[in-house]
Image (cartoon, rainbow, N blue to C red; front, side, top):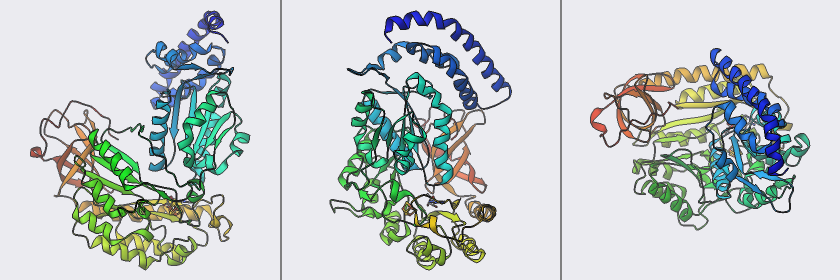
Amino acid sequence: MTRASGQVESSVSLRRITLEQKRLQVILVRFHDERVGFAKAKFACEIALIPTLLIAPWHMRSSVTKWATGSSDCDSGDMASLRYTSGAMTVLDKTFYIETFGCQMNAHDSEKVIGTLVREGYRQVETEVEAGLILYNTCSIRDKAEQKVFNRLNDYKALHKLGKRFAVLGCVAQQEGERIFERAPYVSLVAGSASYRKLPEMLVQLEAGNKRITGLDDRQTDETFETEFTARSNKHRGYITIIEGCDKFCSYCVVPYTRGKERSRTSDSVLAEARRMADAGYTDIQLLGQNVNSYRDPSGKLSFAELLTAVGQLPGIRRVRFTTSHPRDFTRDIVEAIDAAPTLCNHVHLPVQSGSSRVLQRMQREYTREWYLERIGWIKAARRSISLTTDIIVGFPGETEEDFERTLSLLGEVGYDAVFAFKYSARPNTPAISMDDSIPEDVKSQRLQRVLESQREIQRSLYSKHIGEIVEVMVEGSNPARGQVSGRSSQNKVVNFTVDSPILPASGTYLDVRITQSFPNSLLGEAVVASYSYTDITREEVPVV
Ligand code: 5AD
Ligand code: SF4
């Protein structure tokens, strides 16, 4: 279609679009009256909009969506983001929408993907309907997570008829590979995380109209995805991936198959990125890896604990966190590093998965309950009070009531500050999928419930011990209507507090808070006035997160 014919069509479609606009406003108002969330209402409008979009000329489509969803008009920007591809019949609208499922690694991968797309001339938009390219960065750790992307693709597949392109990235992409093209033929690009380095080349193919682009063959690579173009979504706290992949092959886990083999970045490269972030105003850095503490510096300069210390010593850095640690690689020098450097947060996330050595062996975790508890002993013997959190899987094949009770007793023995508990979910390619003695779904659900109830009581007691303490909090958001500010302590606990001032501290501010009340998942307190100055505070209003 040429621009000229588009102009003629536009006058024909305009009447229909104006009518649609009214209809959509009615939908929005109805949803508003029914107190349904704005996101849901917007989604309903977008779906209702699809028939209109199908008849609208391409250059008007984004205006239609903006009317419906109430976003501001920016036609000239839309035009600027269109690129005609030489030789190909397609016109790729260089706007993109990305949705991320799953863990922090995925969230950070998306920040790097966004940075790469922007560098390639794309512009990010907030809804599928507005975008020329729709990307889903997926997770396949459990079955439910995996299903989400197929539901999403199904919800929006009609948009393909408008010339929009779909890309599936991440773990589901790697796991399902080209089968995604059969299941969802409107998808043009399927790429696992080990191939993200090649995104610019894949985008060139996409722009040339190629409909079957894959990035699936890089799981054995030694290279990591390093880029200076990371679009970090938070101005104060940022992630740095220091190690990719996993070589542990726990019998239930899909990650070694989807993210490929373990490969670390050099300490020089990590420190250079951390320094750039500190210069840009970041004060809180989280080092990431599926198995962060099996980090091995390829240049042989620094151990994992030394790297933590080095990041914590950079001027401007006030907090360093790391996740996720594996008990097998948990060494005493990590505890010593935390004890020695106040900038290293006093929090360790150390997934145990089960309290039964028999189950741990079947899970191929390569440690026993006693071995794990020895590491917990090191952490508890530290001079600083280090908070502990963990992951638990209930209903692993063959888990008896007695095994499960070993898990409950371990929770009591350790006293975790938070537990992330999951029902076992059989995953393709993993050894556990062929184990018999599977546990019925209702037993899994009951066990999960018992873990959550028992843990709630443990946390109620642990959190109450903070009453009367003064803790340093980094502000994450505020609710001016309630006069309440929200943030996190170095131990990673949520702290909600009030300030004795009509002006609330901005996100990223650090201040001391006296704890006055506790709940199982958060603390309540009041700011110690002397701990913040007027240079720290602004009228910025950020929603509580
Ligand atoms: N089923 C249930 N939970 C799982 N996890 C990993 N694989 C599975 C699975 N197949 C959990 C583990 C891990 C966390 C990230 O997800 O507890 O630590
Ligand atoms: Fe999965 Fe185990 Fe690797 Fe963690 S250590 S990512 S649970 S295989």
